[in-house]
Length: 147
Image (cartoon, rainbow, N blue to C red; front, side):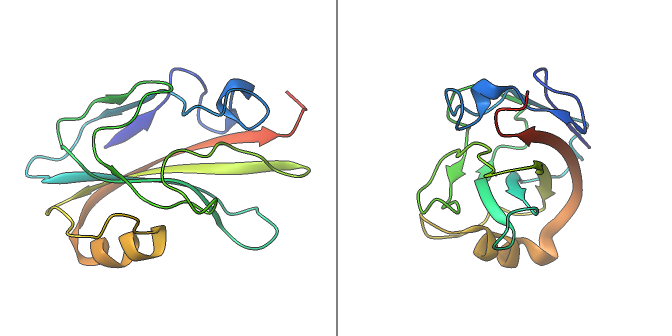
């Protein structure tokens, strides 16, 4: 399984427009080689370099398994959960200092998740624990005003 972006390469810098210093819109993402038999996809984006611990920037669950892309700045096909900002939807990179890593993780599940609207990353991860068929990862970097 693969996750990629036409806006940045793995372990390269995320464009400023996709951060709090720009338009704060989600970057375009492409998905491929989804395993046969997958019932849904989950996307979680987080920053493990945040000073208070891992900060969640985006969660989406119950995306159809035939999803091949999320268009830049557009809502994804699925349910968006709460982020570290306390609201659903994408919240772009916004580190106070230094370069941070942003992990975009895509999971193929053998089920649809039955979660209440407003679920957070911890709840999503717990619900999908025994249902992950495959996962893929894309890491973007961002340093505030240092592009």
